[in-house]
Length: 361
Image (cartoon, rainbow, N blue to C red; front, side):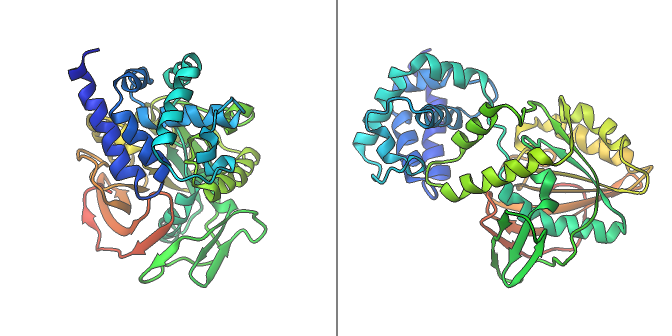
């Protein structure tokens, strides 16, 4: 691999450092910035599984080995998830590099075989207002079809407690509380939560919730500073293991129609997703939308998602994270923007617009 061929990967790591990591993870901002300038590390990162984000895989692989107790040589002192308190500096980058080469075979095995099918449970608090809107309009229980459910945490959204400002709703007995900051007017949520008629997930890479490695890998993908997210994930993971659901393996575009056909006649179909559309090629997104339009000739469908604006059908990702709802009925679709939000569910800014033709969430 020539220096020129490494340039796009270097740019990606630099962008990851400056845009994605810098605001929320000083350690990962420093480490990925370092990788961007290290040709040998870039060559190693290039061995990541095709179609998967190399930065997340490399960082996750190192985090996994550290959590498993591999000799860190002081690197763990920089990881809050491991009790470290040191601020990232040049020494952190040096120790990171040394750790990677000391464990090169295992790291290559991890990044070449694993995927980053994470599912941030905090997003359930962003989607809840849209779920309530769909149930209210349909006057029926919801049949959930999630595209890219990973561990199925969001499929279990009715098993959690929620707090929006002074209002708390949801399962009062749940050990998991999701409480996004409310910017401006609160979203229109109320008790009780909608009734669920069934749960189906369409997953390209199904995970085994009974395999201990599944939990280890998911926790390794959570960034070291985000200890609250890790604790939240453990609670949600336990709830997901105990909640019946159907996970259908394969390409969501190929399995969507059959999943919808399994919905009870009295239920309202609600297709939902969060930060998965960017992983689906543009032409396949068009096919997915057409399936929903075709099915809506027989019965209405509600679709809601939290995504980067522009990624629903034929657009490219933007830096805005938006919650929207689309209503499919009679072969036509009407989309409505509902809110801007933080990708991990830290805050929501409610501000719906009037429905418009189309389905670009």
